[in-house]
Length: 343
Image (tube, rainbow, N blue to C red; front, top):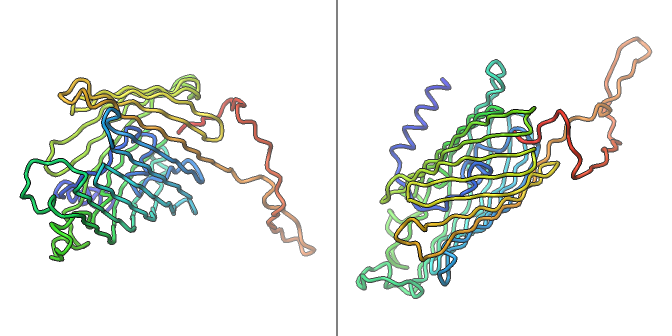
């Protein structure tokens, strides 16, 4: 049954139409931005803020701000919130959504888990054509003073995760982000039930560890399908040195190069910067793209004194929850010997 559901989901993705959505260079570190099923099963809760700037040499260049926070309420159930604002000169897309993920753990296969995610949110799209430059003067979409559309959005996701391997497949936008031809166009195909606004993202990677996990080599690859454009593939080589320094380099099939650097601090703090350059393409004069993220994730193991065991007069034993817990002091830069911070 599990295999059949995976095959059905992949077939649905393959047959779907797509739309343009922001693809993040740091997809391997932040799969939750695109996949509602991925909530980092190795942490209890976490949050990440990401800013992305495209074509730095251009006026009114594209900018994207996104925030995602997750909380694993139970081992088999997790919740997260997602918000994004994507602006490209005269076009702006804003979305606020909530995600829920159901997880199944297969302990006989090295900690393998399957997650199925659902995203429900609100999306607003705005087009101000007066800020756009275009040649086809009779295009009805571009000759309108302004178009504003809002409505419901639903997304789906699937994740397969082990301590070393991960696979993410997602359709984060099933419902209507397609703009109408004019402010007065109310035809059904432009309603929020429009199913041609889908996009497909697939990413996978494997972690090779040595020296008790203090050094990690993490090659990853991501596939992005957008209708009207060729399949875009990003291949990246990532390194985590001494559980502290993050370095990465990648290449995309649109002939752009990517480089990343950052630091991983104790308790899950991480600061990553990514540089993307199209110098190898015809658009070399448009300038580089920049991406910065600040993330925090925390795993809180159960305190051994959370429950106090006592014996009743009749000999029965019972555990009583003890709520006055003093958490240990935290030293941000303290080495955690024998314990891997990165999973």
